[in-house]
Length: 247
Ligand code: SF4
Image (tube, rainbow, N blue to C red):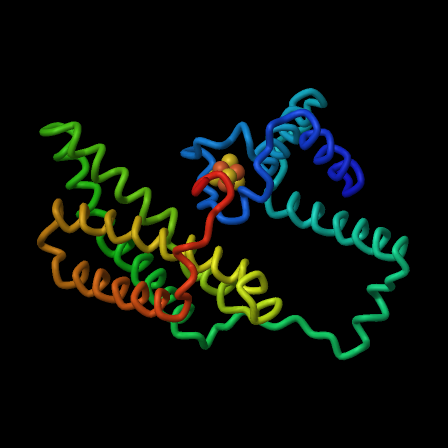
Protein backbone atom coordinates (compact mmCIF):
# COMPACT_ATOMS: atom_id res chain seq x y z
CA UNK A 1 0.00 0.00 0.00
CA UNK A 2 1.43 3.42 -0.93
CA UNK A 3 1.81 6.16 1.69
CA UNK A 4 -1.10 8.09 0.16
CA UNK A 5 -3.37 5.03 0.13
CA UNK A 6 -2.33 4.24 3.70
CA UNK A 7 -3.32 7.76 4.75
CA UNK A 8 -6.71 7.43 3.02
CA UNK A 9 -7.21 4.05 4.66
CA UNK A 10 -6.30 5.56 8.02
CA UNK A 11 -8.81 8.38 7.55
CA UNK A 12 -11.52 5.88 6.59
CA UNK A 13 -10.83 3.81 9.69
CA UNK A 14 -11.02 6.93 11.88
CA UNK A 15 -14.35 7.88 10.31
CA UNK A 16 -16.01 4.45 10.56
CA UNK A 17 -14.71 2.96 13.82
CA UNK A 18 -14.83 4.02 17.44
CA UNK A 19 -11.07 4.52 17.58
CA UNK A 20 -9.32 5.62 20.78
CA UNK A 21 -6.87 8.26 19.67
CA UNK A 22 -3.23 7.38 20.39
CA UNK A 23 -4.00 4.12 22.23
CA UNK A 24 -1.18 2.33 20.38
CA UNK A 25 1.45 4.77 21.62
CA UNK A 26 1.53 3.47 25.20
CA UNK A 27 0.37 -0.13 24.90
CA UNK A 28 2.54 -3.23 25.15
CA UNK A 29 2.06 -4.08 21.44
CA UNK A 30 0.81 -7.51 22.37
CA UNK A 31 -2.20 -7.35 20.03
CA UNK A 32 -3.01 -11.05 20.47
CA UNK A 33 -3.77 -10.34 24.11
CA UNK A 34 -5.21 -6.85 23.75
CA UNK A 35 -8.81 -6.07 24.72
CA UNK A 36 -8.84 -2.96 22.51
CA UNK A 37 -8.16 -4.34 19.04
CA UNK A 38 -11.56 -3.06 17.82
CA UNK A 39 -10.67 0.48 18.88
CA UNK A 40 -7.05 0.67 17.71
CA UNK A 41 -6.16 2.28 14.38
CA UNK A 42 -2.83 0.43 14.12
CA UNK A 43 -4.55 -2.93 14.53
CA UNK A 44 -7.26 -1.90 12.06
CA UNK A 45 -4.63 -0.86 9.51
CA UNK A 46 -2.99 -4.28 9.85
CA UNK A 47 -6.36 -5.99 9.36
CA UNK A 48 -7.13 -3.90 6.28
CA UNK A 49 -3.73 -4.64 4.80
CA UNK A 50 -4.22 -8.37 5.39
CA UNK A 51 -7.72 -8.19 3.88
CA UNK A 52 -6.41 -6.44 0.74
CA UNK A 53 -3.58 -8.99 0.47
CA UNK A 54 -6.04 -11.90 0.71
CA UNK A 55 -8.39 -10.46 -1.93
CA UNK A 56 -5.54 -9.79 -4.34
CA UNK A 57 -4.13 -13.27 -3.55
CA UNK A 58 -0.70 -11.77 -3.06
CA UNK A 59 1.76 -14.02 -1.22
CA UNK A 60 2.50 -13.12 2.38
CA UNK A 61 5.15 -10.40 2.42
CA UNK A 62 8.37 -10.29 4.30
CA UNK A 63 7.63 -8.05 7.31
CA UNK A 64 10.96 -6.20 7.30
CA UNK A 65 10.66 -5.51 3.56
CA UNK A 66 7.05 -4.40 3.98
CA UNK A 67 7.81 -2.04 6.89
CA UNK A 68 10.76 -0.62 4.94
CA UNK A 69 8.61 0.14 1.90
CA UNK A 70 5.87 1.64 4.08
CA UNK A 71 8.45 3.91 5.72
CA UNK A 72 9.80 5.04 2.35
CA UNK A 73 6.27 5.81 1.12
CA UNK A 74 5.41 7.60 4.35
CA UNK A 75 8.60 9.71 4.12
CA UNK A 76 7.71 10.72 0.56
CA UNK A 77 4.22 11.63 1.68
CA UNK A 78 5.61 13.63 4.60
CA UNK A 79 7.91 15.57 2.24
CA UNK A 80 4.97 16.33 -0.09
CA UNK A 81 2.75 17.45 2.78
CA UNK A 82 5.54 19.61 4.24
CA UNK A 83 6.14 21.25 0.84
CA UNK A 84 2.42 22.03 0.59
CA UNK A 85 2.86 23.94 3.87
CA UNK A 86 5.96 25.75 2.60
CA UNK A 87 8.49 23.64 4.54
CA UNK A 88 11.37 22.08 2.62
CA UNK A 89 12.51 19.14 4.70
CA UNK A 90 15.46 18.46 2.37
CA UNK A 91 16.99 21.86 3.10
CA UNK A 92 16.66 21.28 6.85
CA UNK A 93 19.05 18.36 6.62
CA UNK A 94 21.89 20.78 5.81
CA UNK A 95 21.12 23.13 8.67
CA UNK A 96 23.03 21.14 11.28
CA UNK A 97 19.75 19.53 12.36
CA UNK A 98 20.57 16.21 13.94
CA UNK A 99 18.26 13.77 15.62
CA UNK A 100 19.27 13.08 19.19
CA UNK A 101 20.37 9.43 19.46
CA UNK A 102 18.55 7.31 22.04
CA UNK A 103 20.46 7.47 25.32
CA UNK A 104 22.50 4.28 25.17
CA UNK A 105 24.68 5.47 28.05
CA UNK A 106 21.69 6.12 30.26
CA UNK A 107 21.53 3.89 33.35
CA UNK A 108 17.98 2.69 32.64
CA UNK A 109 18.72 1.81 29.03
CA UNK A 110 22.01 0.11 29.89
CA UNK A 111 20.53 -1.96 32.70
CA UNK A 112 17.42 -2.90 30.71
CA UNK A 113 19.74 -3.97 27.90
CA UNK A 114 21.76 -6.00 30.40
CA UNK A 115 18.53 -7.73 31.42
CA UNK A 116 17.66 -8.67 27.85
CA UNK A 117 21.17 -10.02 27.18
CA UNK A 118 21.08 -12.06 30.38
CA UNK A 119 17.62 -13.44 29.56
CA UNK A 120 18.58 -14.48 26.03
CA UNK A 121 21.60 -16.31 27.45
CA UNK A 122 19.66 -17.92 30.30
CA UNK A 123 16.87 -19.16 28.04
CA UNK A 124 19.41 -20.51 25.59
CA UNK A 125 21.61 -22.24 28.17
CA UNK A 126 18.63 -23.77 29.95
CA UNK A 127 16.47 -24.68 26.98
CA UNK A 128 16.69 -28.38 27.73
CA UNK A 129 15.91 -27.99 31.45
CA UNK A 130 12.97 -25.69 30.64
CA UNK A 131 11.52 -28.13 28.11
CA UNK A 132 11.93 -31.04 30.51
CA UNK A 133 10.14 -29.09 33.23
CA UNK A 134 7.33 -28.15 30.84
CA UNK A 135 6.92 -31.76 29.68
CA UNK A 136 6.81 -33.02 33.27
CA UNK A 137 4.23 -30.42 34.27
CA UNK A 138 2.08 -31.09 31.21
CA UNK A 139 1.65 -34.68 32.39
CA UNK A 140 1.42 -33.98 36.14
CA UNK A 141 -0.52 -30.72 36.40
CA UNK A 142 -1.92 -28.96 33.34
CA UNK A 143 -2.59 -25.72 35.23
CA UNK A 144 1.05 -25.50 36.33
CA UNK A 145 2.14 -26.22 32.77
CA UNK A 146 -0.02 -23.32 31.54
CA UNK A 147 1.29 -21.00 34.27
CA UNK A 148 4.95 -21.69 33.43
CA UNK A 149 4.33 -21.53 29.67
CA UNK A 150 2.62 -18.18 30.08
CA UNK A 151 5.42 -16.83 32.30
CA UNK A 152 8.00 -17.79 29.67
CA UNK A 153 5.95 -16.13 26.94
CA UNK A 154 5.73 -12.95 29.01
CA UNK A 155 9.49 -12.94 29.60
CA UNK A 156 10.16 -13.31 25.89
CA UNK A 157 7.62 -10.68 24.89
CA UNK A 158 9.10 -8.00 27.14
CA UNK A 159 12.72 -9.07 26.67
CA UNK A 160 13.67 -6.07 24.49
CA UNK A 161 10.60 -3.95 25.10
CA UNK A 162 11.84 -2.43 28.39
CA UNK A 163 15.10 -1.09 26.91
CA UNK A 164 13.31 0.20 23.80
CA UNK A 165 10.75 2.12 25.85
CA UNK A 166 13.39 3.57 28.19
CA UNK A 167 15.42 4.65 25.14
CA UNK A 168 12.42 6.70 24.10
CA UNK A 169 11.64 7.93 27.62
CA UNK A 170 15.13 9.40 28.10
CA UNK A 171 15.11 11.45 24.90
CA UNK A 172 15.15 15.20 25.61
CA UNK A 173 11.57 16.36 26.23
CA UNK A 174 9.83 18.55 23.72
CA UNK A 175 9.95 21.26 26.40
CA UNK A 176 10.49 21.18 30.15
CA UNK A 177 6.83 21.31 31.17
CA UNK A 178 4.42 18.52 32.16
CA UNK A 179 2.94 18.72 28.62
CA UNK A 180 6.40 18.69 27.05
CA UNK A 181 7.32 15.60 29.09
CA UNK A 182 4.12 13.79 28.05
CA UNK A 183 5.79 11.24 25.79
CA UNK A 184 8.72 10.72 28.18
CA UNK A 185 6.32 9.92 31.03
CA UNK A 186 4.10 7.67 28.88
CA UNK A 187 7.10 5.73 27.59
CA UNK A 188 8.56 5.44 31.12
CA UNK A 189 5.22 4.21 32.48
CA UNK A 190 4.85 1.44 29.91
CA UNK A 191 8.48 0.40 30.54
CA UNK A 192 7.79 0.25 34.30
CA UNK A 193 4.61 -1.79 33.70
CA UNK A 194 6.65 -4.16 31.53
CA UNK A 195 9.13 -4.52 34.41
CA UNK A 196 6.23 -5.45 36.72
CA UNK A 197 5.04 -8.09 34.26
CA UNK A 198 8.59 -9.43 33.90
CA UNK A 199 9.09 -9.58 37.68
CA UNK A 200 5.82 -11.54 38.09
CA UNK A 201 6.85 -13.91 35.29
CA UNK A 202 10.35 -14.45 36.71
CA UNK A 203 8.84 -15.17 40.13
CA UNK A 204 6.70 -17.91 38.58
CA UNK A 205 9.73 -19.37 36.79
CA UNK A 206 11.62 -19.30 40.10
CA UNK A 207 8.73 -21.12 41.79
CA UNK A 208 8.89 -23.95 39.26
CA UNK A 209 12.66 -23.97 38.81
CA UNK A 210 14.13 -23.19 42.25
CA UNK A 211 17.42 -24.85 41.28
CA UNK A 212 18.09 -21.67 39.23
CA UNK A 213 17.63 -19.48 42.29
CA UNK A 214 21.00 -17.68 42.10
CA UNK A 215 20.55 -16.37 38.57
CA UNK A 216 16.83 -15.68 38.85
CA UNK A 217 17.18 -13.79 42.12
CA UNK A 218 20.01 -11.69 40.67
CA UNK A 219 17.76 -10.85 37.72
CA UNK A 220 14.90 -9.89 40.06
CA UNK A 221 17.23 -7.63 42.06
CA UNK A 222 18.44 -5.95 38.84
CA UNK A 223 14.86 -5.33 37.73
CA UNK A 224 13.99 -3.97 41.18
CA UNK A 225 16.86 -1.48 40.92
CA UNK A 226 15.85 -0.42 37.42
CA UNK A 227 12.28 0.19 38.55
CA UNK A 228 13.39 2.18 41.61
CA UNK A 229 15.61 4.38 39.47
CA UNK A 230 12.87 4.82 36.82
CA UNK A 231 10.38 5.99 39.46
CA UNK A 232 13.01 8.45 40.73
CA UNK A 233 13.92 9.76 37.26
CA UNK A 234 10.29 9.95 36.13
CA UNK A 235 8.28 10.95 39.21
CA UNK A 236 5.24 11.85 37.07
CA UNK A 237 5.23 8.62 35.05
CA UNK A 238 2.75 6.58 37.06
CA UNK A 239 0.20 9.45 36.96
CA UNK A 240 0.30 9.37 33.17
CA UNK A 241 -3.06 8.30 31.74
CA UNK A 242 -2.62 5.91 28.84
CA UNK A 243 -5.46 6.43 26.33
CA UNK A 244 -7.94 3.55 26.69
CA UNK A 245 -6.00 1.53 29.25
CA UNK A 246 -6.17 4.08 32.09
CA UNK A 247 -9.48 5.78 31.26
S1 SF4 B 1 -3.52 -0.94 21.47
FE1 SF4 B 1 -3.79 -3.15 21.46
S2 SF4 B 1 -4.34 -3.64 19.36
FE2 SF4 B 1 -3.43 -1.60 19.34
S3 SF4 B 1 -1.23 -1.91 18.87
FE3 SF4 B 1 -1.51 -1.86 21.10
S4 SF4 B 1 -1.72 -4.00 21.71
FE4 SF4 B 1 -2.11 -3.90 19.51
